[in-house]
Amino acid sequence: MNILEWIIDPANWSGDGSIPFQTMMHLMYSVAALALALLIAVPLGVYIGHTGKGESLIMGSANAMRALPTLGLLILLVLIIAPKIGNSLAFVIPTLIVLILLAVPPILGGVVSGIQAIDRSVIDAARGMGLSDRQIIWKVELPCALPLTLSGVRGATLQVVSTAVVAAYVSLDGLGRFIIDGRAANDYAEMAGGSLIIALLAVALELGFAFASSRFISPGLTRRKVAPRARAMQSTTTLINV
Image (cartoon, rainbow, N blue to C red; front, side, top):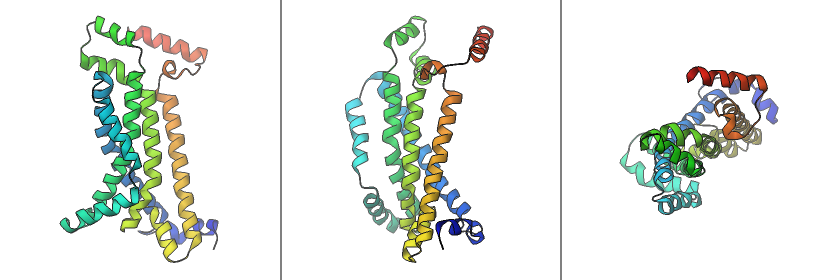
């Protein structure tokens, strides 16, 4: 059986171990890890970017996480946590921790870089208009930092999705199951098919981020050209809002 035959085999598209099921589990772990990483990285990034405090310590610690061996750390956490928890959470929690540590640095770096890249005259003008620190963060810094923030989230997403295959190493479901189980059975079509699905999933997410960037980020922040009609509509909307 070759890769194409394995992918189109109806047996692989139904049941608990099917391609749709394993893709859903893979995405579930990835989304959970990314959501928790955002809750950690965005507030820290805003604090560092807005105040300029703790950059060397926090950013240095975050970047040091990149050097941690993912598989080795996962096994260590399982050995520590598993004796204390008697259910599947003994494997889910270590997996999420590993993926969160992988996702935090690029998101944190994107938020900090985005805020620090803002011209200080813009911040001074906002203060001169009477905006408080909270208003400056929500109405000036975060919107202006959105392109670099989204770039950091994009990088974190691709890293997490491609690394979430390690969940299968500790007996969890996900697309990594095809690689682990295929290797155990010497089924190279299953291994290659699972790898191909992971690659296609990463490409689909990359295209999704590219679409989101083109739709939700202001052209003035990305320096992309706007069609005359679209520019006129934006101007009209601005005048109406004023």
